Length: 590
Image 1: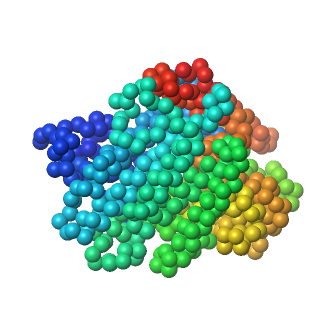
Image 2: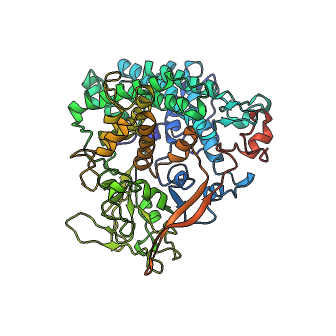
C-alpha cells in the first residue's frame, strides 16, 4: 500500500499548473462537444482535485495555525500568521486567501467531473467490468472531494455577521471558477445550509465508493485490484467519508455553531465514529493486526491507524525547519510554555494539581510520556535510538546555544520533536530522508471525536448507548505506547481519568478538550477547536527563561490579539462581491 493515488501523468493535460482551469491541449483544441474524446483529461479532474491537497504538516494551514494559538510561536516577526495572530494583519496580508482559492479550485474540478454525468459516461478502460468499477469509484471521489473542500472552507471562513446571523460560504455545485462568476450572484449561504450540503455530498459519495481501499476488502481480488483496493490508498472510501460526516456533525454541534442546542448532531457524530471504530478494530484489524494501544509512528504512512492520508512526500524539510541553527535548522515554529503545561504528570494528574507531584524547579521530570515524544526542552537529546549515544543535546538557557535571542533559535526555549526523524543527523555526511504524509483522519481523531460527542449525549460512563463509553475512548489514547516506545498513562490505572469521568459531563469535557490539545498539537486544529467551543483565543503566550538564578516559566513571549473569533474573508473578494458580507469584527476589511 506504500504508494500515492493513481499517477497524475494520466491527466497531464490538466495537471500542468494550479490555474488555467481549461487550457487547450497542446495537440489541438477541445470543446464541450468533443471533450469525451479525451478520457484522461476527464479522469484527471478528480486527480487534480486530489493533487491540490497539502501533504506536509510543516505548512501555514497546519503547524502554522498552531502558531496563531497559545500552543506555538513563529520565530520570524514578519510571518503572515504571526502578524495576523498579534493583531497586525492588514487587508493586503490576509494569510488565508490562498486557501480560499485552493479549496474552490478543488470544488471546481469535482464539479467538472460531475457535470452532466460526463465523468461516468466516459469510457476509460478496455475491460468493461473494471471500467464500470473505476467510473463508479471516481464519481464517489468527486462527491467526497466536494464535501471535503466545502468542509475546509466552512471550517476556515464560517462565522457570524454583524447582525448575529451564522454565515457559511458560497456553495458551488456547478463548475464555475470564482474569477468567472458574476460578482452579484456570489453570496454566502447560511452555516446550516453549508453543513447540510457537506452531509448530502457525503451521502452521495457513499453510494459510489468502495467500502475500504484495502485489497482484502475487494470481493474479487483478481478482477478488481487494478482499480480498487490498495491501488486507491490515499483516495476516499466509505470509511473515510463516514469519518468526514462525523467531523462535520461535531463541528455543527459545537456551541459556536449550534445556538439552539440541537443534540442530534452530537448523536450522529458519536454513532458514525463508533461505526468506523468498529471497522478499524474488527474487520480491518483481523488483517492489519491493528491494536489501539500500540504506538503510532509518524513516518509510517501505511500505519493501520490511518483512515485517509495525503499524498506521500519524502524529504528533510521538517528537520531543517524545526531544529535550531546549532543542529542544522531554522527553528521556524516553536512550542510554547502553555502547551508544555498542558501535558500532565506521569501519574496522569495536571501539573496544577498537588497530587501530580510536579516540581517547578524540575519541570521536565516525571511528565506524561507523550511530552517526551512531542517536545524538545533544556537538556533533552536527539538520539537515533535508546541504545545509541545522543548526537545533539539542547541547551536552551539564556545565552546557551539554543536559548532565546540566538541566531535561528527558539524564543520560548522549546522545540518541536513530534514528526521528526530521530535518525536525521545534521552532522552526518549523508542525511536520512523520511517519508511522510498528512493524516487527515486517523484513529486518534475517532477517539477524541467519539469521547466529545458521546460525553455530551450520555455522559462519560455510559457504555451501552453506543457500545463504548467516552471514558474508555480516551483511555485508548492516554494508555497508548508512545512513538519512542515509552509506556502510556494508565497501564496500572488512571485515577485522574476516572475522577473526571465520575465528575460528570462538564468535568469530563474539560479533560477531552485538553486531550485534543495534547494529541493533535502542531496539526493545525487548536485554533478551530477553540473557535467552535466558543473559548477565548486572545491572551499572552509564554516561554521559559532559564538562567543561573532560576527558571522563569511565566515569561510572556507575545500576545494573541484578534478583532474577532472569526476569520476574515479577503478584502478584494468583498469589494468584488458585496453580497459575500464580511465576518463580524472585520468591518474595516470591506
